[in-house]
Image (cartoon, rainbow, N blue to C red):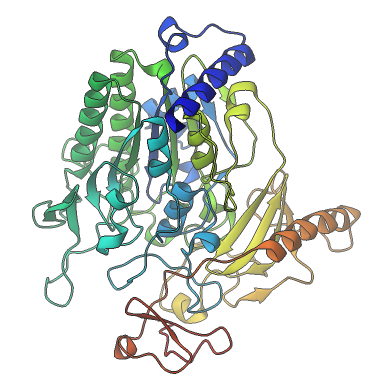
Length: 528
């Protein structure tokens, strides 16, 4: 029954898209109830400034630049978090990490993800995109990095995916396989090897064939589903641009940007091959493709192992623009007009809701969904007024509304880390903004006009009429959001191993991990 309803909604959507564009759909598209295939191409730590179409001077991304020329570019598109795991959880659930549990209460405004020591992961109560797409008959595959938990109950195939080739974590390592094993690689339920072993990565030269392996997995999946005439969802989440960056031998040494650029060039070539296959199969008008990244470039690894965030301040780990504003391109020939630039504020969570809309499905009504349906923007150029919330751990750090961004807290990292050479904003010190203490601005937030000042260097004067007008609007939005917020159970707390199997009175166990009572967060001996 759900599949029939989805098919009906897809017919209506197709008619609206054709009318909105004033163009004819092809005969195949108009004659079928099958919804479009969906390809989400998610990069890892790729910065806003890494593509030629965004101004990267070496112009080494011809395929992605052409994808933008044939589709729609989003210069104001955001991750849901400045770190990998929470951003990916937000994409697949359409919900802020503070809602779906992908945050920590180890300390205020602390970033967290899912290394091997973390026992948490995506809760069973969360409804992931591939599971919902099954209602419309989709076959789903994830290629690459999962990062939503590595214990058996968090396996992608338990959360809606039909196929998986990749890893539960990033390609960190190599490890000694005694105190800590190398990260495993899976094909569906079977572990088929480990990074640095069966899947070698040469950290000295940067040579690895992983991107080629991931590319072939994508091509084979597309061919199989097209032959079977199944609508498919492919989540291609590769990690070549995450340090230690890698590329296959034909691409090593070919970029003006060094090894990181080699990785970008191979990704660009791979995207080109995927799009060319869709053209060869004549399914471009029935295949929606979206390219973006999980968070900003990791400037701590730059310039050899990190990318560029263009004109924006800082990078990964921070809630400044460089940490959360991402490259984003939508491509759907025959539906999305070519050569368009949309100034819609977009979020990675919108891919959840937009994908459901493409499938003719409604988002779940029993929970708050933060993602918007971007189809009216893509198909008809509509702009929707919406805020962007910048969270770091359990703390709302900033809010953007229209072109104004208000920082309620500022923080890069601690003086202790900074003194040891850990710098999230190299060469970008802005007095009173890129602070190494958690600075509270909740009473009088720092407000920037991102159109005039994308680098967040010149806060509006507190005494200006502009500031006062914006302050009223943006604080009202933040207050309404926080008053209505119901946080999920935190999944990313790190435990002191000495107490992992013992819970002091008042502490609740989460698997083998302890959750402290809110009244006494130190009670459970948390590692900070």
